[in-house]
Length: 308
View 1: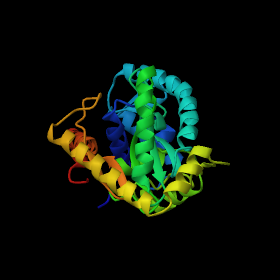
View 2: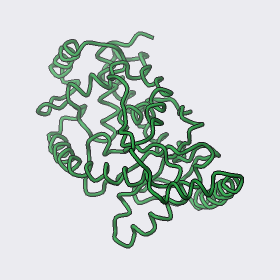
View 3: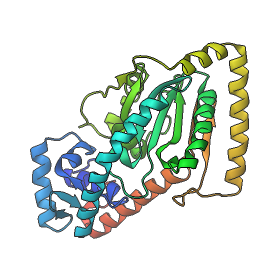
């Protein structure tokens, strides 16, 4: 179905409006759902702003005519600039855990935003069939970070192993998370991950070339020793046991409908080769919110009817 440039731009702004995050002209071009030229995007933005269908807030654009959003974003970008340096250092440290093959920064920080409640979220790739050993070591370490009050720096909430590099949920939410993911370090696995998920160009055809992570030059003695000890049938058994134990514990949390610190229902979607937040909760919430905003845009502008 034909989609006009105006509709594409409004869809981009509607998505980030869910997070009260206005965008620059360059960012709108980057997240646009159709191939375009930056000059054409600028021209359409001027038309939309002139007709008051969108609003220009300094050098940002938004569906909301609220200058406070500009101030919020500017402050969030400044805070993120400092926090992201910490995130890269922590990511390099986390790579030294057994069976970790790639580390990336995800969440709001990967989109260059942070506030007083921002966590440092990490996306982690492990060796095949050793995800649950890696995850358990890392989460045991995290328990110690509660002592110093730095647990929010170690939010390791999305794991896949080398046999599950291609993300199964393919939608605008996961595509956005993938193209904004900041690779930290690895052994080439992060590069393979981006190659396996080139389907994101269907959602964002204007994104630049492949991202590359920094190759880790050497591994810690703890990582080498643990992998040497568990590279056998014992390791297979331990990994299976940890998967079953963790799955049972999280199933209990879901049954209790427990919420995390952000008020989002806790849930874990997992099998042998991945462990990630249950998409039924936050991911679906975002997609439903986007659909609602697009319907509001259609109601406000008849020309948009039946276009999405």
